[in-house]
Length: 338
Image (tube, rainbow, N blue to C red; front, side, top):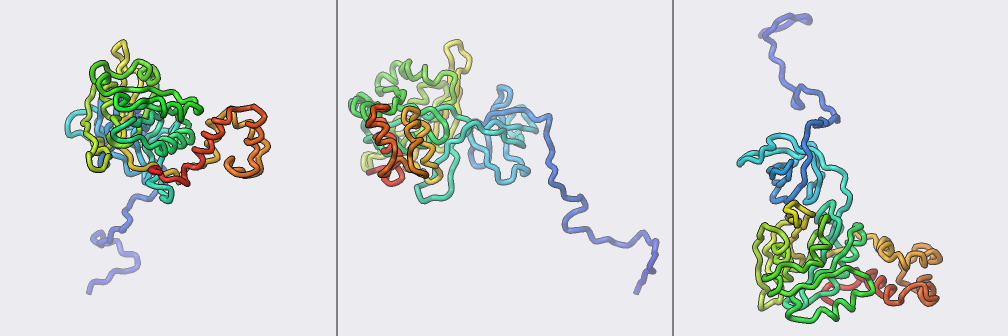
């Protein structure tokens, strides 16, 4: 048996490598100061399509980002092959601070929130006036989510050739929402109405609605790229999902240059609000907000003793506005189909 002395200088001794490797661990992350800026256009099964200097690049999330998610609308830093050539792959190494985040949960009991898009300016709530029948509760829930995220809400009513828009517009008139109304035949022949185009110019607008309401058809009329569309199921009265992932598309301007972005999203069956702090909804009612100064501590603004009742009774605000606020605050207590 071969033995070695205490101070052996043999150079053939085998040293077992460390399981942790020879490089010391560090929490310092590379800065990637040479990374290029990009805009995430879509996310599909872990692959991201990113617009970098006018080119669309396929990328994946870098391991150093950990569990931090990347969503459509994110401004990111990208390294690697940025040519956009086929079979090339870049890496997203940093997600810039988000200006806004639109979230939802699966239902009101779901503790896990899902980010729909980041950095949007507006939320276009698309609903059909018929085929399928409108569901005002979903509209209310989307309004609450928009107010919470700091997005400007737009109400877009489609298929006005099948049912009048007046009753729906009257319902939401106290909220002072901007709105647009479209008809199927005119949309196909003339494109979207000019008032809708005007509201979208220079903005990033995310379109949300049930399947079958004509959301993707509307987006197709606004942009040059065409996405698949479907019909309403004659048995269930619900639309069929044709959009499977959110996609950000440039909005062409009159001068040929891009003039804003529209984000098409998959049709939703429900819009949970478990993540929403309903106390923030009052900020969307600047005419009512001063009246809350005399409210009891932690007042929900929808309970006996709320100072808003006296504020409105004294003529400081329209009673219809208070009714609309309280209808929105009750959204968690009502199912969308009620």
